[in-house]
Length: 600
Image (cartoon, rainbow, N blue to C red; front, top):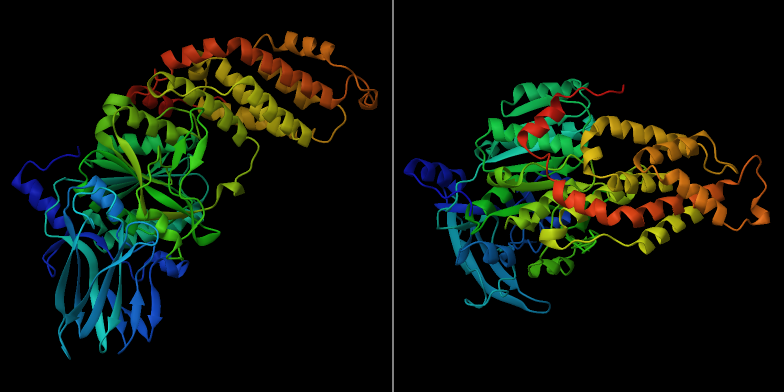
């Protein structure tokens, strides 16, 4: 469970965070009108149905006989999640109105099951003052049936000119959990995107967000002060924000540093990891806090990823993990501007993990499971999510909580394959006993490498083979490496190989790779010789002298690594399963942060 409120002072503090005095209710979810994201994806918030409307502070003005619809991704109330993970029996649609309007409320629990809950007249004719209204809605369409909660939305139709403000879903019941948030942003040379997010966060904190967020740690992996004077100015103005400079330890090192600082310097219950290059609507923080205040169990609450290239499209709402550590995205390519498409979330969808573009982690489990693995990038989030799941902490991806991020198809650097390969293999090994994950077999890797060879992408192949070799060399060698030094060495090695793509003969880059693989797997040299001797020579390929042609050399090298994979896998798996979490304590990570790199 979350931290239950144990004293009157704590209860008063927690209740005051989300209590709306004008409505005399506890706000579960504000209706978002003119938020930062409205400028890039307006239809995920609301749509004009007819007539004229305009923004006013905190709400909307509607001309006579005008209507606006909130059957939208950002403003639906997902009872399918609230009904499952909280104990609230009902929710109220609340607000304040000057003039009169009809509010029609609907529920959709499954495809083609649109149910009108009611059509409610609110306000007074020709009123010059705002009148509060409260519309009580049962959490479920069938009181005893889980799965009947569905999704709730509403339309507003003005009976006369009117203004409506403070729209929200709310409750009479005070929150049972005391929740405080800290935020960690890991950044590396993306100051333009970071500045936009920090400015949005500053406005959010100034307008009441400080009630939810205690501290915000910005970990700068460049190891130097920010170049942007504007970023420095925001950090200086905002007392909740702290910049931390450290060398480049990847996302794993940056996010872990922010979590460690939160453990030391913040009394928050949860820590939210946020990528530096997202476009953040800070309302996500508010929604997350409110949900956690009512959650009936400990949860990791993740935000969903919208596609920054197509801002109305949901790219991913969390993911499931296959038994070999292969990811299967959930909620893929949903058009959130389409009321029909967002019906995907009329029902709850289970996931295994949520990426750290936006993810709130309960801090109280860190002592039991340790800090994230020092694996630089790629996989730190789903590994840690799996460790939390093994501790009994479920992850959900909460619809209506979201950030915008570049789609990952845009991130195609070959060196990423090194981390994809190495870290997935580490993941399967360390979680084999408790969660039943297992390595992919040689046939899979052979087919993968053959496909890369057929494309002539020797750099990608080199990255893949290096990733396999670093796993097979075992955890003792891995933990002696410095993450930044290793990253720089891998990048340099792959850059040398890249120069030889398209060449008829292998050269210095290939030889450096063979040496690096031999340092990890000493049997590689003999394996190459054996594979070369066994290869039938195609006369059409023997054109580059001296020596064999490049394709034959790469085929021999690949075969040698595959042979090493087959011989070493069982022992390496056992070593990682036994020792993989030996270096995840606070002291371990403090030594990493204090260590000086060996390369420039």
